[in-house]
Length: 147
Image 1: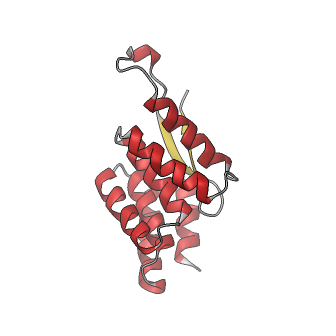
Image 2: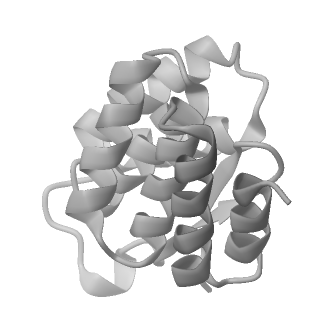
């Protein structure tokens, strides 16, 4: 079975460590490409390895600058790192390349815009809830909030 497909299923099941192993297996089988690197980056994000995730996703975009899933995932990493302004630009690129067709990318862009337009000081009780990266279909990720 395809390592990417196995990895996607493991990510959906909340098993990012096992998914990462499947994605690495896919890299060995298929070679390194933007899709494989994007998947590896998203698994690293789920594992809290933000620096590694950012580096891998930027490498994916070097291979294919128009690969929308990698752009979206990089935006998620940047947002998680508190780099809302850069995340906003990355999400805008993903949104434009996707022609605004993917709801999750639109929502990610909306969140990044909201983060860049919030006041400098926000009381802890007024902060937005935490969010998580979740795979939805082929190459789509969305940030979901915990309430």
